[in-house]
Amino acid sequence: MAETKKKTYQSASGGKGSKNDVQQAYKKAAPTGSAGGLRVGAVLLWLAAIAFEILAILVFKGVVNLKFMPQIAQLIAFLVLDLICVIVGSQLWKRANHIDPASKKNKVKFWLWNNMGVIVAAFAFIPFIIIALLDKNADKKTKTIAVVAAAVALAIGVVTSIDYNPISAEEKEAAVGEIQGDVFWTPFGHVYHAYDDCQALNHTDTLTYGSVEEAINHSRTRMCSFCAKRMEKEEGIDLTNIKTDNQDVDEEALEAIPEAE
Image (cartoon, rainbow, N blue to C red; front, side):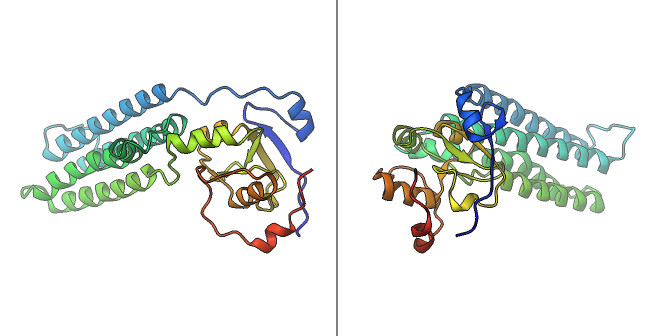
């Protein structure tokens, strides 16, 4: 088994030090914002995105003309602003969905809630693309550049708006109910770990820790599959209803993990 690195621990509420030092001074982290507030912010940004799209359409049609900038520069500027609003709004919406996820019992709402960013991205660029393509009087060069720019922005907006790690209300409730104590996660990882000596963390110098609810609120919606198997084996906890990483676990490597103290 590879030697486990000495780690620095960081509380979800801030502060660094050794694990014992941080836990002695541990304070439960405040909720990661308000789901309602985040959703309001997302909607406002998405409305701004649509407004920038409308401005881009008006510039393309010659209705709006900022004389200090060439037409193509105006189009690119408004499409970029459109994209920024789409992306930031989608990140806020995804964070809100992790704090207050929809229930899988309502399949329509669950799908809509987890794909809203993608839907908005489509509305923020596809009408512009259609209008530009159907305009037979537009300058060919301007038309080509505008359509390509909008198509690229659409692709970026869709990719960044997808929630690759959605969670349902039932899965979050099960995780909060079953997993007690602190869990751990890395700055750029997508899962949380029940054990700080998990072999998947051997190359990580800094860990953030907090409750499983805090981990999910920080978009770590799945438990590491190594930790899940170990928890079932050592603690007999049923993780059937808890969202776990879908990677295959090396059973021999799992056997090599020392028993928790």
